[in-house]
Image (tube, rainbow, N blue to C red; front, side, top):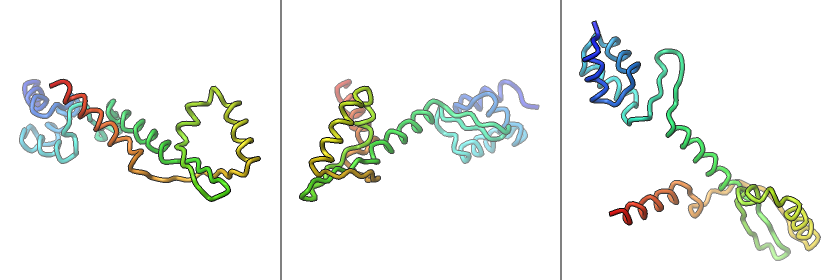
Length: 150
């Protein structure tokens, strides 16, 4: 029999949800140590980062949403519009920048037509560049903010 005290103790030690605590304690017949070990092996070690598969559904946390948005933004930074002039000099522009300028689409179209008339060529490629690594940028900002907070 799993008691609320056992569930509370499991939650205190692992930061798991009530449902996860009950699931692991029931699965391991109330053996707290085995349940905690199984919980950690399942990869549920960080608070607010639970993904539950044992009931046939999946619940993702806000950090998963943030990671998804981060991957999407990184992809927009990796996809580049490559502009090549007559001397084969290339300019890589992340596709995110023109997307941010969509309200001025008519100006962008006129500029692009003018550049084509002058002999510029446009292509779209995926180019990964360390200068546009979103994780590095965010970690540098976080480090600077922490340094100022101390």
